[in-house]
Image 1: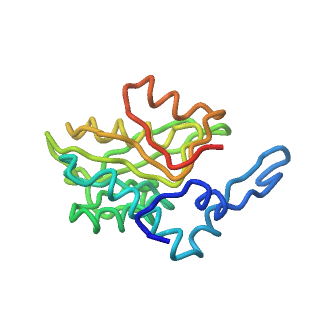
Image 2 (image 1 turned 45 degrees about the vertical axis):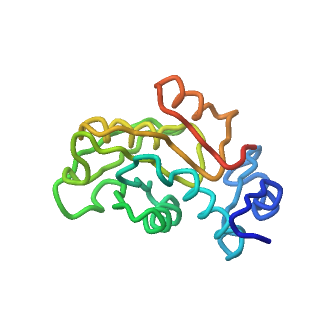
Length: 180
């Protein structure tokens, strides 16, 4: 297989479905099986790199924690700085914080205040888009630093959970390699 050729069927064959996890009625899409496939991960990384190459992007933003597995190789492939968005208390220098609502409570995301400056253009990457809360929080942090989110991206979109629609309604472009 030519690694630069994207195959959604191949990608989907590498994502495990785990029924009734973490609770009954939920079909969990597990990327740990994809992570075990060097060929599959190479396909994912190269597909993202091809999409964002020569787009005027200045930074890649990776969301805690599985987004780090995608963001670091993408930033490396494009020779761009990596900005990490973490759960509170994990970053050592001055941060700004954005709270967001989860299905069963609240969470928050932080970024270093010196990660971005006015005029920077960033792609935010995570493993999947569910309710959109994490990506929306990261987008708000980017805007507070006067930078621009060019697109949010993920391996998987779960459109029935509404996250990609919320992002689009907020004027944020969305791209995913596959959806369930």
